[in-house]
Amino acid sequence: QAHTTRSSQRCLAFVDDVRCSNPSLPLTRHCLAHICQDTNQSLFKPCQGSEEVPCNKPVPVSLSEEPCCPLHLRLPPQMYVPEQVLAVPQELGAAPSELYLSAAELQPSESLPLEFSD
Image 1 (spheres, rainbow, N blue to C red):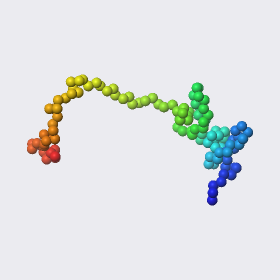
Image 2: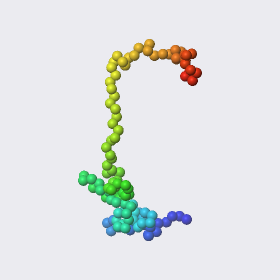
Image 3: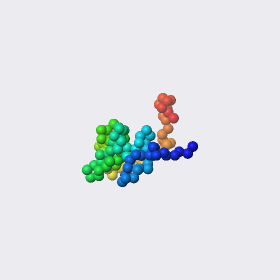
Image 4: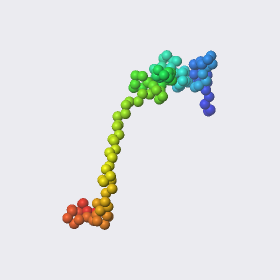
């Protein structure tokens, strides 16, 4: 059967004397935008916003005492501080090629135990 929205499944909120046409949330009589108008519900609270930007967007109640929408979420201070890159002196940066061994020179020695040889 095709899904039809009955008037009892629509939001009961009125905006400018016009009934909201959004479908209500399951087991409620209001849509997500107007769920805070339902005084019997306890799963959503309006976002407190900030002094500069007031906000009343409904947000789910979580572990925080003052739930906020993503726009007004206060992030904790940064815990990771990147290490400062030390400048390499010029004489260490240009190492002579004699310090590096070629693949042919990296042959295992006979004095090493068998598990350490290739």
